[in-house]
Image 1 (cartoon, rainbow, N blue to C red):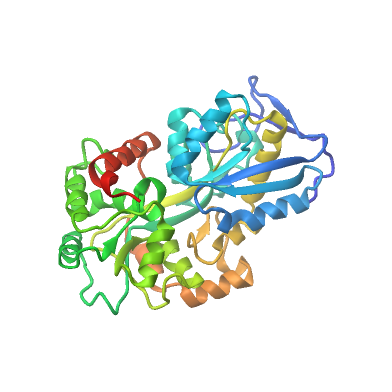
Image 2: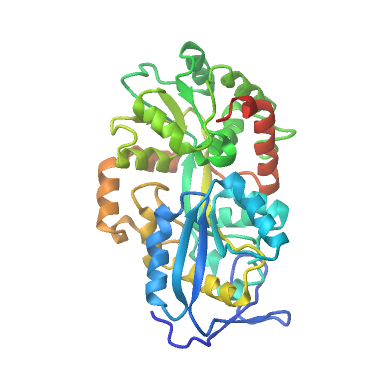
Length: 395
């Protein structure tokens, strides 16, 4: 609904946990919405705009009194924290919102780059613990109050392969290692710090290998680090992003990679990977769930902060969440309850009907769902992978 009073106030309050507050505590501020439309700059480091750009544009159309224009840009996740930090040091922050996965979220939490959103601004947002799917609520708990989940999926890790090339499909982690030894340079995966499938594979291995503590990459991943090093002996190099991996799988340069539900479906929709590509799950695997977050860099003006909080609330409505089915990129995609595929645009329904996989429903139902590492430990895991596994073979 179009905003009718541009001097409406957004009250900032909060309570412990995810929910909004019923009252405004004494420490609360009042943020006034701008008296003239603002230009918003939104940076995507997770591929999230494929899921949310239409909904964000819907906000601009619905509320022209608040937003005149939105500038969308994309950037590599590892480069963003340094850029924001430099802008903050110069008191010239020109990025208003970041759409990110756990990688840049974690780096930003570690470096104190983000506006604390919860509980400080909970009263300006929906009651998140009431609207989120269970998995999305668990992902929200990992954000240290400095990001708000906008999309969610069970993720992976899964194997994706070309059936004409891979006649004996690995069924265990040990069989995968053996296959890569027998088929050197035919398996590939991307650097975890800049890839959802890459980090999901890294974080899923401790469950597959029976490591002592899947949540502690320093003291609990002895088997995982040894396995990744052994696997690396059969890998030519590690691309800097998932898109490059899917291109190599699609053009025949590689025969097998790691994937997630969305990275399986969407590249086949787009024709990057042939439709006939297959997926497999290793025995005993646990899903490592994933989400995209909306974060706001510290230094954004109060007027823009008020608009951004309103935008976040808009993007969490069922109507706008239905756009996140997209063409399967983050399958399913919605973070809130009650958003079904029949609510999505016709092109989304058609793409998922043709390129989705009926086996996903059973795989999701029959295997445990685990949250990723906490942000501080994820940063450590990325660093350890770069130093011990892939640093010399990165591209």
